[in-house]
Amino acid sequence: MSSVATEPARHAGTYRGLVARRLVILAGLAGLLLLSVAVDVSLGPARYSLADVLRTILAPGGADLQMRVVVWDIRMPMALLAVTVGASLSLAGAQMQTILANPLASPFTLGLSAAASFGAAMAMVLGVTLFPAAIGLMVPVNAFVMAMAASLLIFGLSTLRGVTVETIVLLGIALVFTFNAALALLQYFASEQALSAVVFWTMGSLTKATWGKVAITAAILAVCTPLFARRAWALTAIRLGETRAAAMGVPVKRLRLEALFLVSLLAAVPVSFVGTIGFIGIVGPHVARLLLGEDQRFFLPGAMLSGAVILSATSVLSKALLPGAVLPIGIITALVGVPFFMALILTKGRKAW
Amino acid sequence: MVRLALEQLGARYGRREILTNASTPWLEGGALTALVGANAAGKSTLFRRIAGQLRGTGSVRLSDATDSDLRYMPQDTAMTAALTVYESIILALKQGSGGWRLSAKELAAVDDVLHRFGIAHLAEQQLPELSGGQRQSVSIAQTLVTRPKVVLMDEPTSALDLYRQFEILDALRRYAAETGAVVILALHDLNQVMRTCTTTIALAGGRIVETGPTLEVLTPDLIRQLYGIDSRVERCSQGCPMMIVDGPAAQLLTA
Image (cartoon, rainbow over all chains, first blue to last red; front, top):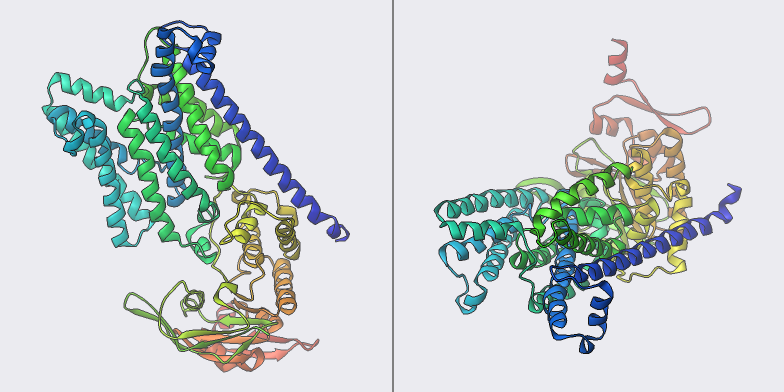
């Protein structure tokens, strides 16, 4: 016990080192994201050099009109939508896994994407709009309304039953099956043209990106992130178990409902714009957890960054795999992401989950 | 000096009444108090009712402390979070304080509990890698890092080996003496209770049947009433009180 006097400094020092290492990892992820976005913007059917593209981004006035339109109006919104959507879905998945204490949880296991697909299909097959004022945006608005309706249903019913993890998960699974069946029914009666539109929509695609969509998804991130950040310690404590967190003074049930609502927003809006890109919500948080642990001060930005990096890199791949064609990004995310994800799980020896 | 008294506390799960009119005289801080009783006697319910996690009738009176000075440690459960022991204790310290930054004083408080409860060597370990006993020690450190004035611990030594039981109970006794805190421990080992706790609360069927100095409460009659076991309480040759079982348990062995 003679080392007691010097030991405390050692542990605090080790901890400071851990914090510094995590900040470096976060900075690395941010750097990776910038790189990926730059490559993403430079790739496309029209072949421009990276230097030309960078010049067009930094000094748009000097570039010729065609290049300015391609880079600023087509590629930039797509590349940035990949970033905001990736960050939103990953953050949604991260907090879902946190509040439900379940590594499999994601906005999609709760039926949000099934509901969104059903809403989109209603527009494409039946021409039904759930919000007549926005007839031009029928598909995304329908998808959003259905996704929010699904999550509000879970919200309401689980409040009746006491907001336990089991209630939320079981209701979510019931909704997945319900909406999938309803979607199949619509597809069964759909015309061939409508059917292919529905199928393509559910594959997920960034090609309909606009600056408006980038702005909306970014705004939702800008609203939700600080709300989660303010609760960082409480959210981390929930992962020690419900009773332990409650004993530390965390209002577990209220926090769960608040998070559920924010997660619904974070997931429903991107899905209504780009279709089903489900894998990000599971893999993004797991990558962040393996790299940074679950202290939300690092896990929260880490999950957003890793989700954004993964979707941005996937966007690059979806253009690079078949020259001249842009493959639906929802397909590539899972096909390319899964082997990478498995390698990560198998090489990291941690026992968390 | 911190003091705590219970007045007619009641609690129910649905229609089932778990706790009835639980009252105690003023319990003085500065030493350990034991809460004893058979399984399902209502020990955890009483703790959760005092901690405000359950609502019900009656009231908890505190002197020289407020509700926010109270910490409750639930019974041991798994911890699967990807956090180090050090981080998990920081987490307990920072609840309610909001800010993301950690002061040198806060880090010193974490180091203090790590050493106080003999788990400094675990500081950098991941929670899921801990054994049951290690996890329990970490739980205790999490509970006491804020230096609460009222502490309720549900079976804090149930997963510990014999040496660690003595070490932890001794550390808890010193914590109470240093801070003047009211520390109530739900314990099953009556010999440990007699050795370390000055006051004992006995609970049976959701009612407090006795509160007072440990040796006056833990009589053979009361032990029979609580556990259905015939026993004697005697002094060992060194003078320390011991419970010796002659009842059904001993009969089972010789049968």
